[in-house]
Length: 134
Image (cartoon, rainbow, N blue to C red; front, side, top):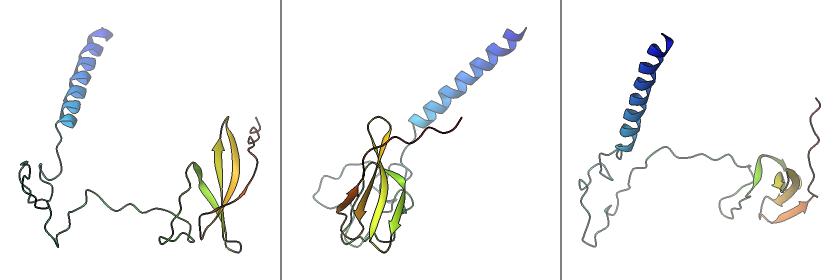
């Protein structure tokens, strides 16, 4: 008796999943195939003209991404830390930013950089965090 109710529900779920996948695969661009809202209807530009005339700016696909950066970061001489933890500590008196860097074997290393130049500063030895109490 129970199998008679499960089989149609399973088949219906499979059909619904197939329809959702088909819908996702057929999705187009938000402008209906047009790049700037007034577009060429899918035609390819052959001439040497730019797709956006001077003075016009293309609309973006979404909102601008806002990054959380330390207040000492300046865009005139930017720097980037790759492989760091999201939590940082800034020393305003020394102008240093401290972060944890993951190394091999679940070990971590504390490093610092100069916030004005991005130059590496002090670096500690890699160590393993203590096991949490059980």
